[in-house]
Length: 113
Image (cartoon, helix red, strand yellow):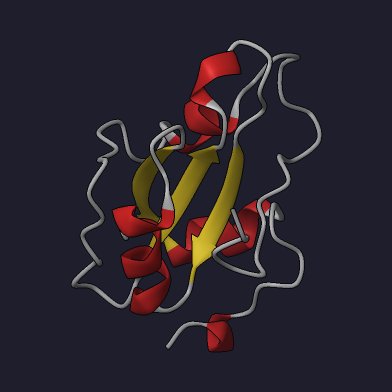
């Protein structure tokens, strides 16, 4: 699967060993969804966490991407693209929290549509 966004999340230094992207994001959104709902507030962002091979989920490492355009979320939900073994969770988090975390160094407030 092609990366849905150029803004991949790299977990910040100083986290406990074994911290997953999902558990890190759950600090601010404990109720991720499998269907994206674009945030109504301009202060919020949508983050997609993708696990590409559900057959080997114990070995696979999930990747997180900040979605800056609504079409990026729509593309992830296009099941005609063969996503039958791909797991995607969507988290709604504060844009400022993402910027302050340093997890996406190239992300700026101007990157969102």
